[in-house]
Image 1: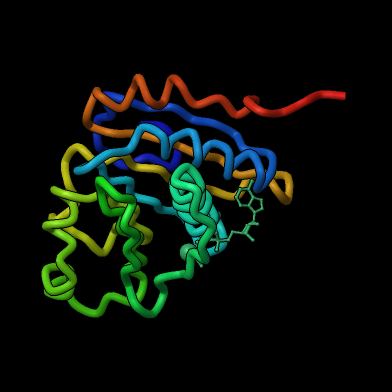
Image 2: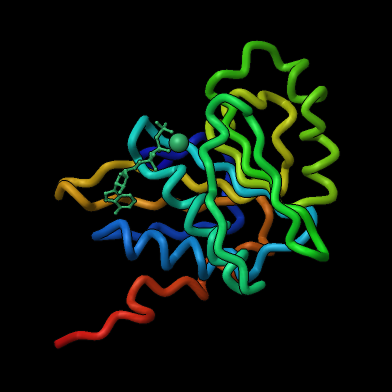
Length: 175
Ligand SMILES: Nc1ncnc2c1ncn2[C@@H]1O[C@H](COP(=O)(O)OP(=O)(O)OP(=O)(O)O)[C@@H](O)[C@H]1O
Ligand SMILES: [Mg+2]
């Protein structure tokens, strides 16, 4: 078992080192292009690892693709923020303050997992309700101040094509 992973057997996986918030944002935007109804991304990792940064960049890129520039507030207190992307909704959930798993049902998250694009921070709170084919992204702080280790994994093989397409160098111009 690799460091930082659970005992889950990953059919798809990729580890990427991001040297800066900008690179993390670019990777989030690249992933966002692929997401459609029923896709769930579970963002875990310690406080300050970059879960919200990743989610916000992904949401802003999907909004920008529709010509929209909007605030993406943290769902820390509301637990969920949803965005209408036209043909699909995107739900951003932060379950840190979830007091009871019943709230997951009350929030409508189970149905959203089927019908919407879902980004979930603190997915440990989902317990058994985490979809089996979700994409897990675990962020960890690296040795350098702005470095983050992004460990992607899923029990669903379908994600491998998406993970292979992520390019931390894309859009970087070297002088
Ligand atoms: N390579 C990097 N990738 C992502 N964020 C980075 C990176 N380097 C530095 N940061 C900074 O780390 C911080 C991450 O904060 P963020 O709110 O996204 O963390 P979080 O994981 O959501 O924490 P919390 O559990 O408190 O919600 C941001 O200020 C971001 O700019
Ligand atoms: Mg956060």
